[in-house]
Length: 61
Image 1 (cartoon, rainbow, N blue to C red):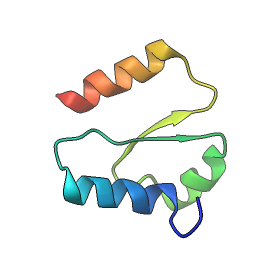
Image 2 (image 1 turned 90 degrees about the vertical axis):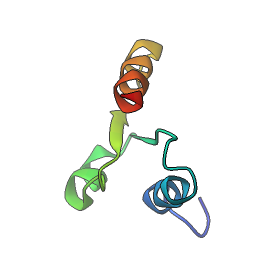
Image 3 (image 1 turned 45 degrees about the vertical axis):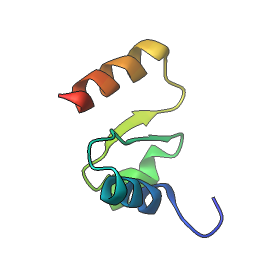
């Protein structure tokens, strides 16, 4: 993503729409493991619809 990474985008979404769940997805989990997820849920690629559904339900609580 030119000009903004996923964490910065998630932070901006959270700032503008605090009630909207934000889920990070990455095939490069080692990068997020080193830098942290900044409080966002993380799904490792490849992920299933069931995994995504569980994370979204958990985030909605």
